[in-house]
Amino acid sequence: MENSVALSLQSRALIGSEKLGRRESGFVRFGNGVFEEKAFQTIRVGDQRSKRASIRSGIPDAKISCCCKKSTGHENFHISVDEALILKRKSEDVFSYLNGRCIYLVGMMGSGKSTVGKILAEVLGYSFFDSDKLVEQSVGMPSVAQIFEVYSEAFFRDNESEVLRELSTMRRLVVATGGGAVIRPINWRYMKQGITVWLDVPLEALARRIAAVGTASRPLLHEESGDPYTKAFARLTALAEQRGDAYANADARVSLEDIAAKQGHEDVSALSPTTIAIEALLKIEMFLTEKSKVRNSASIQG
Ligand SMILES: Nc1ncnc2c1ncn2[C@@H]1O[C@H](COP(=O)(O)OP(=O)(O)O)[C@@H](O)[C@H]1O
Ligand SMILES: O=C(O)C1=C[C@@H](OP(=O)(O)O)[C@@H](O)[C@H](O)C1
Image 1 (cartoon, rainbow, N blue to C red):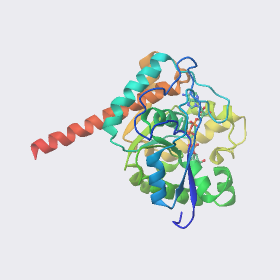
Image 2: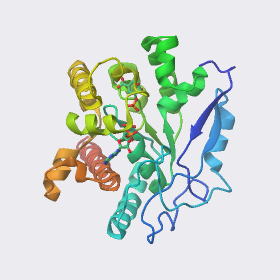
Image 3: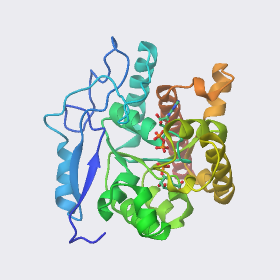
Image 4: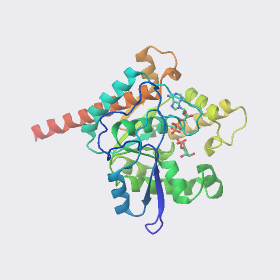
């Protein structure tokens, strides 16, 4: 991405009426109990000044929204009053520890990076970005699938790295990265400017989710034959093996199996995105408090 090229970054979850600080109230309408994606912000990559100014100012006329329905319109995730309150309290705790640092969500395709990322952005008063969407915009194509087809995976990966580099200069963002962003060490350098969080979801659950929405938008899953679940599962298994421990570089790991066990569920499909967002905040808090303890004891010793 060259500076001269005017590219547009879109943030789909900046849903607050305040100017990117803490939202004091109204992030959820309890009566309805679902979130709805409402507002988006456009900023230009390549023009750092307008980008930062735009991010600082937020969206003056954005409405506080109460429920978040995915843009596909197929799913509603219900959220209880209790969960909404825990989410709000935990976000307030974590907000000060974060001190403006960005959150990068990593994980396999379908692990919920976008779904959970939008919730985190909303409660923290951060902007949400999906790195796949930013690559699409920077290349000027409507889908990642098309970029793979017309150019190549390598071309997509180069642009993905460039997008992550740009984002790494910014603050107060939640970024849903593409599932393969973890394979390039340079991307870790960019993402480690913020806090990295791995959404660790069992492959069966991923395959079920992806089969439900289809593989058309995910070119790496599109080649296999067979029914949607079987082909998604086979390809995800191969990708997970290739990627090995790459996801484990993340600062915090959110294991859906662990949350399900803790809550007495047999299956991770019982876990709502809100429950997962709460766990992500807990893990971020643990990581940051641990880090500051280590720093403090090092400064006492030295
Ligand atoms: N906790 C969850 N339970 C059930 N389905 C989910 C959950 N989180 C996400 N999904 C669904 O899984 C699919 C992939 O989620 P998405 O957030 O797009 O993943 P990613 O951004 O990691 O590719 C979407 O259809 C989404 O609605
Ligand atoms: O795992 C991967 O290599 C990919 C994941 C996709 O992102 P999501 O994880 O958002 O589906 C997208 O970047 C591309 O299709 C490649």
